[in-house]
Structure formats: structure tokens, C-alpha cells
Image (cartoon, rainbow, N blue to C red):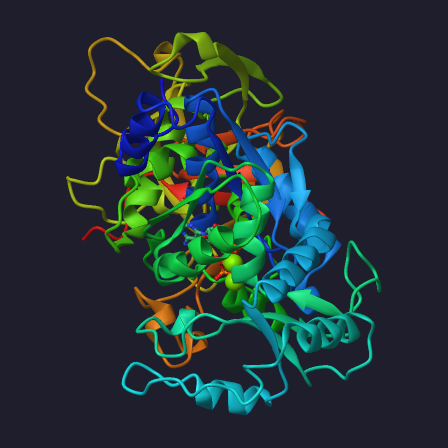
Length: 548
Ligand code: ATP
Ligand code: MG
Ligand code: MG
């Protein structure tokens, strides 16, 4: 099965292969190491690595590291971890734009020698002002007609550190009247004294994105350079640079629409604000739309890939409902998650006719629809815990759970009948007194109709855990559209249940397994979170609680 469903990009590739324009497809994923990857990046990763795999091609990982002030090793490492976790591999084809600083510099001199680049001494404000806008043509810089010799000398002096930061730039000499602002003599080099994560203090001038990206693609022999729609207006510049330097390869830039998901933020800059302002517990907080947050939350990588595939690739801008993402996760986990019993809000039940000190082992299937998951033994004894919600005083006839005089089935165990509820001084029910039918072992007995089945845990064997329930981090469908997206932060996005209980033998397991706590939700142990008890994060609810 293909990684990427047929779309306009695969059609272009098919055509290029038929026309023998290429015989080997090369793509790249080009993150800037200035933050953690988010669900939007997953689309680009699945597309670039997926297309390469589908065509027996190659996909490079290239760090687009030309803005040293915002970049760090921590970010670069997290990006690699996230790509691998999503199931993709760059197979030693890991590059950095900074690997090409020497070549990029040489290409800049080549443009100068061809009379196609000049050093501009205007201030950044003057440059911005004189670029004009859609209604206003650009005004040529007074430095635009410097001679080749003067430009070369100036540019070399820039490189040698003879000028202060921001005092001069190198610009491509294209067309100040162009209808496309990107073509109005774009800046291609700036002076910036900053320590770089790869090149240290070797450079005090750094190339700009539009100059760097296309040349890096060409150096690496990229055949199809896939990027998001906001770069459509940059394509003429991409092509101009490649056409005017001496380089054999001319990659084809193709734009597709970004992935946006409702109720989330997909912008590293905004995500970093959430981290810096302490709204969340780091980049990998389980409520974050980062890949590392989704991992900690318990989203399976296969389900994220499936979601991206479901969304598809096109040029149409859209916002995908968070419900779509959650449905894909839920359907995946319904098939893959082993079932266990966990009680979120425990209520003690004493089974009065069950012998004291007796423990028996019952058998529970690990997955009702998939026998290959096998079964496990579950201890049963006189005192058990059930969910507080599963008891109701004076319940009507439609309540098929515990109330005085009503019989219910304990999952994998026996029928019990409730006789009495014991209350504390404040009137809260703190214990139920019940009896069981010894003939109903395994959950069936002589044709009696028992509608309700509830989960439970033997008190003596229950493992205390902390459960963390999550709601959406924002209570606005498009937080990025607001003046201040922080106003839309949902104050109730985390609910901690400190007294939950889990059947034995589950919490201590090494492997990262997502479990279905039957009748409750899907949960995964959070090993990064240290408390006195194991912490389980709710991955997703059993049903869509938002589809009302
Ligand atoms: P951000 O605004 O979050 O910083 P970015 O586009 O600047 O995003 P990059 O590190 O440059 O982040 O992204 C690497 C690649 O991922 C780029 O090719 C970019 O187009 C792509 N990408 C980023 N966000 C999305 C998205 N929401 N949907 C699809 N692709 C995306
Ligand atoms: Mg970018
Ligand atoms: Mg960015």
C-alpha cells in the first residue's frame, strides 16, 4: 500500500518519470531548528518521505539553519527524534543549509560578477520603504549601480567583518518595478554577528532563506521541492536564482496547502509562547499539537500517518476538524488497544456472602474482537471498587447499574445485587453492601436477564494510579485568528484524578502500550511525569464528546 494517496503532486512526478525528465525522485524535508515539530509538519514529513518511498526515491533531511539567533541543538535533536518516531528515516542523508555556506558565498560572488547583485548601504527602514507595495512601484537604491569591482570589494569586506551588523546588505538586482514584491531586489545576505550551532563564529554574514533554499535544493539534486502555498509568490525568485548561477540541477518547486486543525495552534512561534509563559508543561505537554506532545499523550504514529493520508494533498486551504483527528486515533486504538479495567472515581463495594480471605482468579479477554490478544487472569475478592457513577440512589427503571435491589453483571466475574448504601455524615455514599450469585461465574446464569455490566477492581489487588484527563487546549476553533490567541486558552483543559485504581500487572509494564480502560477511555502511562504513583494520560475518549 502506498504512503501517499494519488494527488496533483504524484501526477506531476508520474509525468516527469514518463517523460524521462528524472529516473530517481529526490525530495527533502527542510525544518528550521527553531522549535519543536507540530502536527502541520507531520503532513510535510509524510508527504516528502512518503512520496520518496513510494517511488523508490530518496528523501533528505535538511536543516534550514540560516537564522542562528533562534536555533538550537535541542531543537535539531527533537526534530530527528520526531521524524524517526513517525516512522521515517533519512538514511544518512542529513544535511544543513550551513554545510553550503562556502558554496552559497561563492554563488553570491558569481551573481555580483554577472552584474546581478549589489551591496546596498541604505538602512533597513529605507530598504523597506523603497521596496514599495502592491500600489506603489519600488524606488531604486542609490547604490544599485555600483561597479562589479566595488561590489566585490564591499561584499568581501562584509564577509571579513569590516562593517557593523545591519549596516549593509547584498541584494539581487532584478526588477524594482515587478508586480511581485519578492522580485524587487530581494536581500540575499545580511551582516549578523551570531554564534551558529554548526559553523560557530566562522561567519558574520548569513544568506537569506530565498537565496539559500533553492541553491541547497540544487546542490543536493532535489527533483521536487515541495513546500506550502505561502511560497508560491517566491517561486519566480527561486527560479531566477537557479537560472542565473552556474549549477546543473534545477529542482521544481511545487506548493501545497498547509494542514490546519481546529482548536489548535500550528505555529512554532505561538507554541513557544505557550511554553515560555508556562501555560503548558513544556513542548511535550500532552495538550500540545507538537509531535512530542502527541507522543506523550499516546497518539500512535501509525494513526497520525493515517490522519495525514485521510486529509490528502491539494492546493485548497482548509481547516480540518479536530474531531476528524480524534476519530482516526479512536478507530486505530479501538483495533489495537488491549482492554483492562481501571476505576477513575472509586466506590467501595463489600460482597457480604463472599468468603473473607478468599481470592480467586477469573479470566478476562484482552480484546473482545481479536482473539490473538489472548486473555489474562484477574483477581476477585470480597471487597472491590466500582465507579461512583455506577451507583445511583432511587434510580428509575432505565438505570441498569447499581441501585438498591437491582442485579448487575461484574465484567468477567459474577452477578451482584445491591442491598444497602452506607453514607458518611455529609450524606455522601461511601460504601455499598451487596451479595453475589456463585452460580453466575464468568457472567452468565440460568437465562436471567441482566442488562448492565460494570467494571470493577479487587481492593486488595488494586494499583493506585493518577489519571489525567485532557480537554482541548483552546476553546476557540481558530485561536490563531484572534488578536491574542492566549485569550482562547481553555482554563479547564487538564483534570487530575488522584485516586484512580488500575487492575494489577499493568502499570509496571515496560512497553509503551495504550490501554482501553473499559467503559472509560484510552490511556497511556506517562513515564516522563514523576509522582508517587504511576500517571496515566487520557489519549482520547471512547466517543466524540464534542459531536452534540
Ligand atoms: P512555523 O510557522 O510553525 O515555524 P515553518 O513553516 O516556518 O512553520 P519549518 O521548520 O520551516 O516551519 O517547516 C519545515 C517544513 O514543514 C516546511 O517545508 C514547511 O512548509 C512545512 N510545514 C510547516 N507547517 C506546515 C503545515 N501546517 N502544514 C504542512 N506543512 C507544513
Ligand atoms: Mg520555514
Ligand atoms: Mg517559521
